[in-house]
Image (cartoon, rainbow, N blue to C red):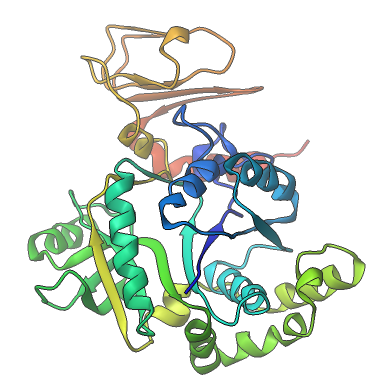
Amino acid sequence: MDVIPVILAGGAGTRLWPLSNEQKPKQFHNITGEGTLLELTINRLKPLHPDFCLIVTARMYEDMSYEQLHKTGLKGSIISEPMPRNTAPAILYAATYLSKLYEDAIMLVLPADHYIKKTDLFIQVLQKAIQQANNNYLVTIGITPTYPETGYGYIKAYDDPSEVKPVEMFVEKPNLDTAKKYLREGNYFWNSGIFVWKISVILDYYQKLMPQLYNAFQPLRDLTVEQLTQNDDLPWEIKRTIFSEIESISIDYGIMEKADYRFVIPGEFGWADLGSWASIDDILNPDSDMNRSSNSKQVIFHLSKNCTVFPDKKLIAVVGLNDAVVVDSGDEILVMDKNASQNLREVVNHIKNKPQ
């Protein structure tokens, strides 16, 4: 059965401001020096030999998405959401489109902004997930936690010795004490947001568990496959009307928390969710003082430790600082304590609401 990567690439990624912003989100930046995050996401799937790739994004990111898709050499299409409505509508949108192209196929749903160090191990886990999806199961990839992270949702598996574990429940982001408890118990995994299932199976679950959302998408099912990728007046107005009326809801809450036959496969392949400047440290090699930079030729560290710097066109000197993040991007500069990473959203909101 065909395996079709579906890459969710519509987020604005404002927690990595000022490098990532609404005009050019993080998935279109070469943060690692190895290619943009979207390009890397597509390329690391090539060992699965997909002959088609689908990207779900926002209308304003279509051109950038096509550019990255063409760089990978894979065939594919892009469908645009009129407005963000979280992962459940985005995945239903993708499944609706793919159901018109394939009698059935395996959907491999991935965010566009993850970094994975060990691609070979990642592919092995995906291959196991694909095998389980062929049995009409809903499969997700859990990341074996290495520390008590409070910024991720968790998946609790039943105590089962097998590699493919039945899911007991999905749990929200915990406080620190609860995260420590999860780590001690050992049957909790970080929720990676990576899912594998048949198109037919997930559509059946939408009908059963989210009938209101499923029925709202009926006008899209009445469109041709060509119209689903078009942003002309009629197709776009149909999409805009649907998305303006549906609720914003995650696939975890809408489907995975309620479905039968849910399985999680733990993975240890050097996964990083690049959702904050603190998380960038996972992908940059440190010097002897634990300082990191995306371009060491443009940065001077002096009497400083555990600092991370992203230069743009200027030389940046960091003197006498510890645990700092410095980012130069266009007309904007960020200087931040690493421990304040989760507060950056407030700054972005302030900038949005600031009178011109």
